[in-house]
Length: 306
Image 1 (tube, rainbow, N blue to C red):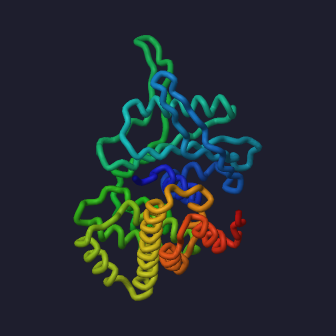
Image 2 (image 1 turned 90 degrees about the vertical axis):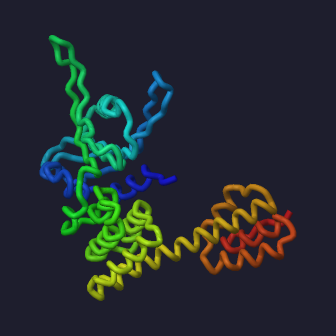
């Protein structure tokens, strides 16, 4: 299962100003970019249906040149849900009531279907009275075409192109173009990895598409080819590492049962050479105590013998 909330939150937290600049540049006209504070998520409980919701991203910002603040609430929605517009109003009312600040609401719809435009308001009205006309900004990615963002020197564009309107035959090409745009931005390795991982998650290719992907990269300029190949090599190594960990965990659980949180964390931090060594260690371990002692030694915290 893809953790959509985590992926979008990591992307937007890291590149929040770039996100606004790309899709809502009018907000930057009155936002003090040095004032941004990312607040803890808010928990909302719908008592009528017994469901619990968490807000995705809440940012406190200061109005430029003023001693006044407001909130920007960004909700990333990966599924099409009925009455979502009502939930957005409930989020707004909760945030506005708790912080006593103006709230600028934004929704990112990242689902593939339906293609019809999503609602952008929630209304409560009577024949003689409009009680509520709540509006919010909508970024519906399947309404946008990836080609329109090819020339945008923006890291958020290089990531979100992977979730825009893409014809099935173009999937491999879009992935290659996302990475070409990314390498031209010359970001630090951690940010490059964040975006490339986002793209790889949402544009996982089959064998035929992988061939087209490599052919497309071969048409890039030599410097771009080299940089893109470094990213894809990184994915491959990470995939090998994840596969090794998964296999070793299955073997350990088969022999010794479920692991505690401490030893799960120790295994998760092992390097590829250490994982290979662990495979050999498992052959010689007669009980779980020996395995725990080895893991503790790799972590630099020798296990106390009892």
